[in-house]
Amino acid sequence: MFIRITDKFSEIRLKDIRPEFLTVGFVTSAELEKVAARFGFDTETVEACRTVNPLFRSDVDVYSDYTFTELRIINREGEDDFISIYVMKNFLLVVDVQDRDSSTKNSFIRALKKYPGSKLCIEKIICCFIDALLSDGNKISEAMRGDITDLEEDIVRGTAGKDMNISLLGIKKRILRYQNFYGQILDITETLGENGNDIFREENLIFISNLENKVSRLCEDMKALGNSVDHLQDAYYALLDQRMNNSMKIFTIITTIFFPLTIIVGWYGMNFQSMPEFAWKYGYIYVILLSVAVVMALVFLGRRKKWF
Image 1: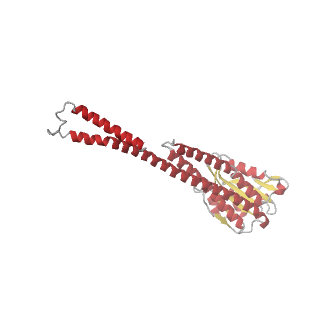
Image 2: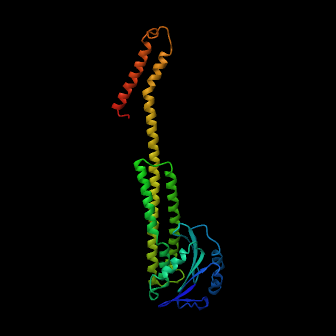
Image 3: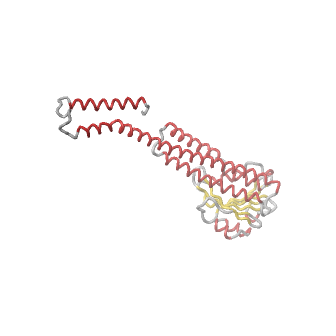
């Protein structure tokens, strides 16, 4: 699909593309061969469009008459799509390498419809397209912030369960994915903004700059969320330490209260004949009452000292 943009949008064929007219294209990796032959794209860039890059961060290659980059996208279903982008003077080509739910193509079409053809330029189209890919960025950040706040409330209330670490790790992995997603777009916008091959008009670079600022804010937002998760993990570990300390405190108090009984048992278990209580008919009751009195005295002392 190739669209020439004037006052109106006209779908054209590959052979009808002219450098003096603003044109955009959306093709599959299989269709790229003919386009590459038509414009003389480097074979390495064509080969890169045949396979899905397993990494988010990829290079932005600047050639004399075009710029090429690969872009891994997180779609609305949370899955990864993959496209490649060629940028020339008055020509933007998007290569569909892997578009599971057609969301990337829909974002591309939505970007074209944002402004009338007479108000579009190649810089604005690029920004509108990438902005469409980032349309859920603020909602995603807000949802993550809500999840983090819920977990924080559980920690503060002391109701955090054993799966708290798993929940925190899941959020941390999501944040890392979006950090890489936004980071690669930031790399692309920075390189495009440098305009090393004079593809863009200087007066239109403001659109690239504005997009770069937006992506930077999204990156900072994700970084702040990552810091929040780190603080939350520290708070959770502190809660676990507190629970452990409370358990040890209880065991210590129990040991303190009943340890004197061990001394009494050991003392009267020696069975020396010279012990006056040994032949005393009330000796058994005496030892019982003594043990009870010692325990009650220690309980009273502990309550007074606010041990428990």
